[in-house]
Image 1 (tube, rainbow, N blue to C red):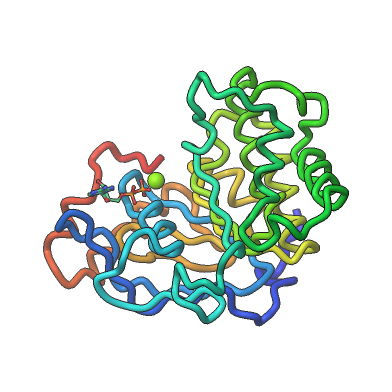
Image 2: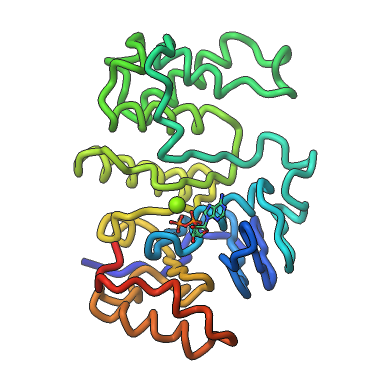
Amino acid sequence: MKTVPSRQNASEVPILKIDNLTVFRSGKLVLKGINLSINKGEFVGLVGPNGSGKSTLLLSIVGVLKPQKGNIKVYDYAPLSRNLHGKIGWVSQAAANLPQDTRITVRELVHLGTLNAKNLFSLSNKKRRKKVNLAIKMVGLQDFENMDVARLSGGQRQRAVIARALATEAEFILFDEPLVGMDRNSRNSLLKLLDKLCHDGGKTILMVSHDLTAIRQTAHRMIFLEETINFDGPAEDFPELEKLANLRGIHHVHGDDNNSDQTVEKEGKLW
Ligand SMILES: Nc1ncnc2c1ncn2[C@@H]1O[C@H](COP(=O)(O)OP(=O)(O)O)[C@@H](O)[C@H]1O
Ligand SMILES: [Mg+2]
């Protein structure tokens, strides 16, 4: 397979800029010394062992968690800034776990994605319908659009919540393990779709995934996080699984306290 230069189509327009970020949760150090820049058009895969701070990083980017130290800017604005309204999307694994008694069809759910405070009254129904149709088509749920979301399989439900995110105007979309419960084919086609959205659709994606093989094949750039960033580079340079153990060793070399040992799992398995 041909290797593609990592940021081939990415522009130099910065979307995310994180400087020296430190985050504690309930008094425990979770993220330390994070420096990260992401440009428009990039598709970045974020991996790391359980509890390594991946979700914490995403929650900090959207402003739900406040950093103890450091600085986060999205489009040059602080998280939660009014100027970012509608520009950041967020899809989690949990998003697909709607309560069993929720009666909402795929189409209705995706329609909700087109509503935001700014366009509630301004966007025409026709335009809204177009956006909804397109998003449903992108995730391949045309045949299920009138079905209750609760009746879908886990993978289909996941696709429905992704369609909702695509129907928004968000340009920077954060995905926290969106591939859980999907079979390999739909996973691959979804990743291809997201990649295309970054290349041609002007979107920028930061995606946490447990499926190392799939994410590595699709993302342009990979980040390995374990309290701090231990690898950040082109996906084709991402180390093989067995070498990751060494990568995790780097963590200790750079660690300036002795507490970091407690985050190392003993099972010898990262995912
Ligand atoms: N609400 C919370 N309060 C305190 N600690 C938390 C909370 N949520 C997660 N943590 C801790 O923060 C660390 C990182 O968690 P998380 O970011 O969810 O990891 P990941 O997404 O990589 O699995 C873990 O040690 C976890 O126990
Ligand atoms: Mg997580």
